Length: 80
Image 1 (cartoon, rainbow, N blue to C red):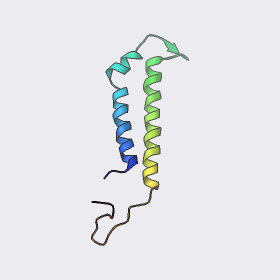
Image 2 (tube, one colour; image 1 turned 60 degrees about the vertical axis):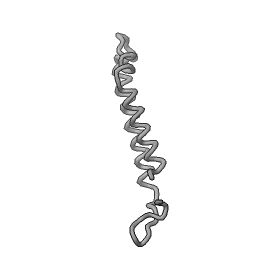
Image 3 (spheres, one colour; image 1 turned 60 degrees about the horizontal axis):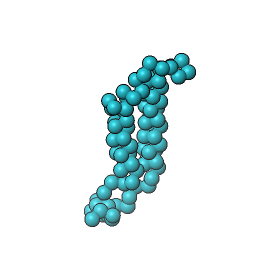
Image 4 (cartoon, one colour; image 1 turned 90 degrees about the horizontal axis):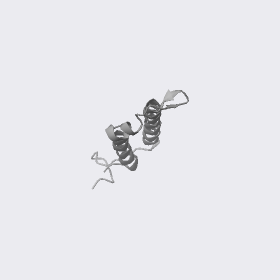
């Protein structure tokens, strides 16, 4: 069974793929500037940075969690 952080990570990656796909990208493909930078690039690189930060936090949380106890036969106690 997957851990909760694994499920959240998979869900977040699927959402990230959705928000970096055609319909959403076309919403920000306008000829306007924000702070002198095209809105499309702000969205694209801002969301990309958000993805990197969230994935690093989720994987760091997985690395800090203690390993599951193992039986002598190599199968985890929680596996059924």
